[in-house]
Length: 158
Image: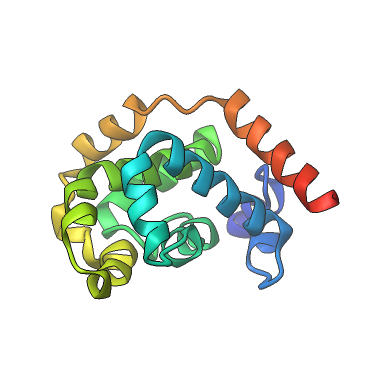
């Protein structure tokens, strides 16, 4: 019962995210692309150059609140924060992962990028406390996320 209520009540209900044609998921991926481009422009350029967009690595973050993407001990911490503070932690989580693997993104071969971005980074992450600390040190504001969401909605409408 609790999980059903959570799926209905969070800002972008999980049930809507699970649809393949989900506007909420597409909006979240757009925001992710913009944040990665802003915070990690060189990594973004390299990933884009090789066709690795946010759908490759971030869709699972939004669909499962990081359970399928992060090692379990980190995912549990992300869930705790998600339930208490909302979806901002998901973008911070994605950016934190990229911060830990930025050097790898820049040096590995194209064939390895997909695997790295989907699950290959797991061994490169610190313990849960250090990971969460890095997440909260990333300055992503509610205002910025709202602006990017509106920007997406405007682009889709026109």
